Image (cartoon, rainbow, N blue to C red; front, side, top):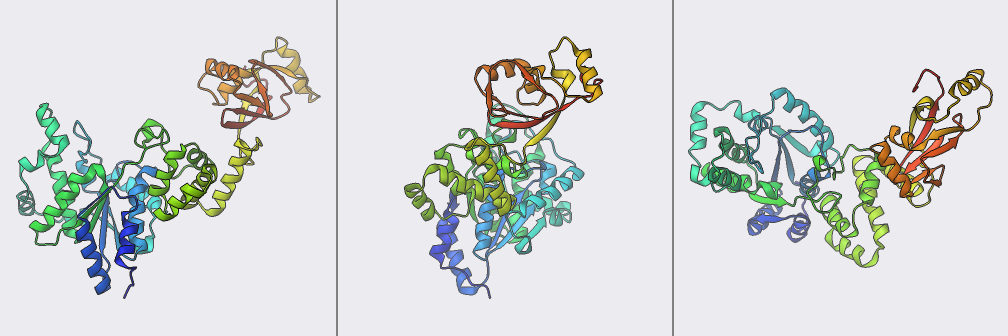
Length: 430
């Protein structure tokens, strides 16, 4: 028989980083029964695999699932392969195009590989909602749709707004909340988790369970976390996201770029650190050291402790000690694309002879652009004027530089750094 911590201790851990619990008194009652019987709660969260890659914003919900798993409860990771073909209308002002079954299964495999960096695969019950929906007959669908009314559906903000604006609402979209709600019936869920934007669907699950003679699930919502800018929600399309498959140094550096105020929100929503410890850190820790600890924890979760240590060392070299990281990206640039010499033929003759090569007059602004350290040559010129460019550690402001192309160059623009190797073949870059 599993053993569980005291109910108050469980509640404190569960409430950390939660936006709302409907209802907390019911959750306490369920936890008390679980503690008395030794039977774990069944805690469900559904994910429609509509995109192949996850970012840290998606992991807020996964982290809360992990907290239930840490406490000894049964976590159900539900893949909405059936609902994904409907398309969740949440936050949509128009009908969402449904995905094909092939796209959904391909994304689902990628999801699982990423999700189990947080959840224990051995302790997680993974289910697909096509298990029960593929078996439903027309009569079952009629009984299901009879549980809810159109007027109840139009209480949903997205539907109400579209109805008022006389925009189309497809019939299959009205099915989505019912289908998600029936998932809770099929899984006999005690608790369902979702983002704050999913509250309507989650509450439908409570209604649906009562309609099918089950005890209503508790609904727990998690916040929508802000991205690197600290303002808009984390989103790859907004360019403010941290992907969970990004390289360790890139992930570490992005965490270090957030504001001190946002750091504490990330601690609460993206780590397992208890609130009491976070409050202590706020009082006693230097913000820079606390942020390094946060970055280390996040990189460890998605890579390893060794990768986190290495990322911290390389980040310190790059941004604090002004040294070059050991794993800096190398780029090969054709010499002919960047030099500004008028005596090209004479220099190529020297190159072909293999003798010593004099310093060449190079277009540093073009080199910066070709190395993808600026969006364009004019952008590179602006960065030079801003004194944001360093060549082998030396600040450069002139768009022309003299350099021996037999030597590699360490080129840094702002926080980005690359090692440049010059291709000396005369038929390249001319």
